[in-house]
Image 1 (cartoon, rainbow, N blue to C red):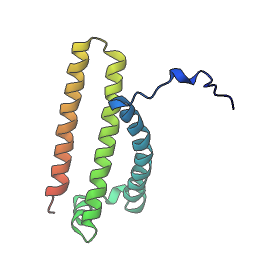
Image 2: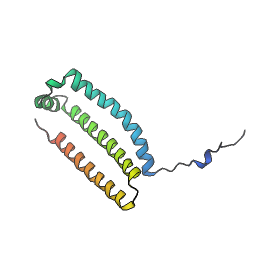
Image 3: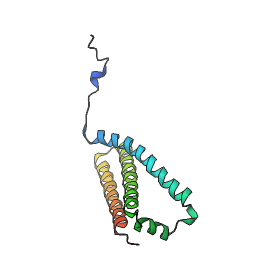
Image 4: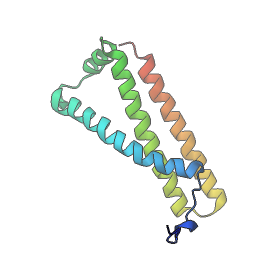
Length: 129
């Protein structure tokens, strides 16, 4: 048997944060496609946009299925924000080449991301109707 590597030996697994961020973007894209489409079908086709009110959302979050819908909405929020902010982080890497500014903008993105996640989580779990 021939042990040629066909020039692939130069490609070595690097691992680390960037590899996992790349992998997350692919997985979260598929997950978002599923949960966002289900959300749109539920809210825009089944319930219909003109019928969406505070009471509709309150009933959904406080009813029998409340814990499921709260978890679902929180998952949608977390996946969408993490996917989006990871993309913004890559845009910062593409366009801001000075190390100091790059770190500044990434830190700013992280702070905004954490604040929005905290606000969304607080809203979902503190909601009583």
